[in-house]
Length: 507
Image (cartoon, rainbow, N blue to C red):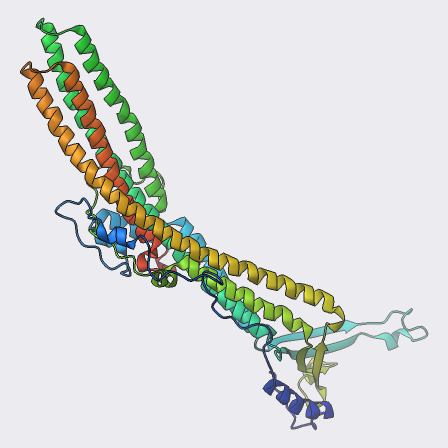
């Protein structure tokens, strides 16, 4: 509040009466509208589960892994992608966290919410402004009839003043608005964390799919080489008069069918490389040379502990963001309700006014104003109550959205658990089928060369080998992707890892 020098003039009677009245009103100030209370996450008449129904599937199913598999860290560890022990994956994820454009958009929204919060907080303190004026005026003959020209000479005027205005928040309108903006800022922070979860999940998923596609491409190429060897053997037998053109055509047709699968896999590899590059904030072609070098899938964890649903709901940024938006909507009911009560504004001005510039700030040139304004819309109560009803409806909608986000988070995790557990079982069977089909194809070729079986059985064994090995590579990829999906459903345990402004590339 501005200060007024009262040493040169007695305090006005209105001001003497106003000070104790304002003090009493401030002491009696209240905050209208409902206080936010965290709601039941699943609604009345229902109870949130204490454990995941599919957690037993995850704990009781052994994963088909190689000797390098490791036990997963606790899901609350930061940077879960590092647990796979793949330096290239780690580098890609951390680059995406610094340069991804979706993250920049989310960060800009968070910055905007912070700015709006700061703006709302300024309403809690007086607004102080200053102004100055220097003017010269002359009356016309029509404005001063009968006055000679000499009497209408230029008149100068100079003034400077500082003014202050302060809304006295007796009924909490400003406090509720600050509360709402603060909750919106927290929601934006968790939106940013949710984008982080999504970006890391997309990069890890894309990386695993790339390695799986490269493995399927290797399998197709290796099988094509085996079938080419078979074709050469059949062709040699035909040239020696011991085979038939029918056998040669069948062997060539199977080779061509296998070769036809390779371009589609090569295209899928290229598309996945482009996607990973864009996720890291680069042009699609930026990582071609780096990612073209095939590498095996990283070792997968033996077991993942999803924790409890309560832990999940405290960790999922989308659920937390929905809760904060409900908080903001509840506070805005109070903002609307405050309009049912009078709004008090304390204003004041202190300055100096003179006819010549040199007389400014002299004793007799000072001027001051103290005023108390009251604005009460009780005659417009219909519109006020309509705004309150709209705010109530917004809060009801945000409550439903919060509970829906809880249900979707639980559903997402249950789905990820069951898919991961079933993918592990499929993975085991596909691996055994791939090993057995490779052995059968080898034995069939040996028996064919010895004349014990005909070519049809060799071709059938080779076809089965390709199908089994391709299915195993695809199943292993889906198992790896299911691990990422489960970490993503559990929010990875790191929603607080918000990138700092100075770490965002190009900011």
